[in-house]
Length: 282
Image (cartoon, rainbow, N blue to C red; front, side):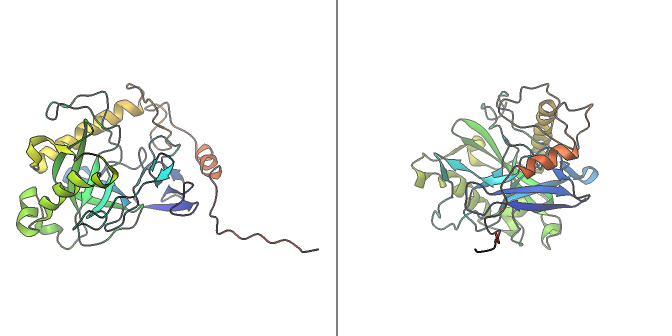
């Protein structure tokens, strides 16, 4: 299963969108239509890369937009960027989300005591390759950090691309500590302080900032998949989220739309400002 992306608008503008197509060239939602599992028997998950390592633009799956393209987050009308908080440069991993997951804001987590943040579950991919925005990769999960962001549960899954040359040696959270000393501490430090330059307080963590292991992480992902199933089947109120999808069957989701409807959604979004116009001078 492969996916491609199509840009609309120009990067670093409010109009920029990155739409997804499947291997048949049909538009799909990266939130709802890309399967969570790449290989369920091996617990291999798909991850949609929103932010490549070392970059600063705060890109995210637009959960409230039709077909959920990737766009840049906006605060008070301004595009959002993460600051370089010494010694970190931008995001220190390939940052993305697992499709078909959802941290339900109506569910109070038994471990964190806080409700979900209304987004797909986040992933920090720690492999050697700098991925591309919109790339869909296959990862194995290594552990998870429970961040509390302004009173909401915001899980951060640690994972590695299965195609990475180091993947065979990394199988649990303890392997990161052993083979990449300092990386887990840097991850906690990054998430604790990245909003401080914007005038926000430091983020807090459940479990005193200690990472939970692979098995705990996988169970957490599965629970968010269950919340997503309730969302897409309208058993849970969607609020402002857009659940339009093309691959979940109409029997399982009242939000299922046709290929033509999906194409029309993309067609309504402006194309690149690099387009040239020609006319005859008089």
